Amino acid sequence: MTTESNANREISRRQFLLLTAAALATSSLTMAEEHNNSASGSVANRRERVVNAGPVSRYATDGVYDDFCDQGFFVVRQGDRLVALSSYCTHRKCKLTTHPDHSFLCPCHGSTFDPRGKVTGGPARRDLPILPSFTNETGNLFVRVPNL
Image (cartoon, rainbow, N blue to C red):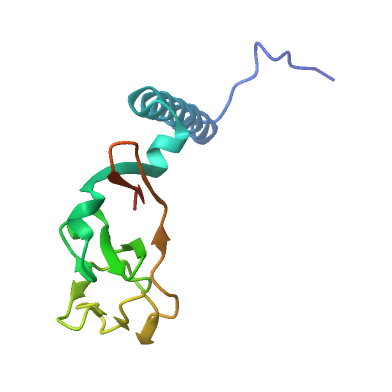
């Protein structure tokens, strides 16, 4: 009975291709992670960005301010309450539009939301998320917007 040493063992073409593909995939993932971490500074930075929405005084009257809709949020003033609502439908992430009554409509599938972001018509089932926001010492509103 003959025993083969590992040095003399031959692998099939299929095994070689599978091992090569696995090595390339692992290498590509590692390089992509290193690039993303160095480009963004950290994993947290890839999940969100902070947007300066300007002075809080800009939002003095009740209503929906859609200046930052393309950046992922609406600023909504209701009395003493100032919030940032996501400008993307919770159904399929379509960009919402505003109505004169301060409600929101998804042009893709027809979901509707009231001025507080509550679902009033489907197919969406989840309310619009309120995004974290804060005011700095100079009175500017900053909103943390998740990357989609």
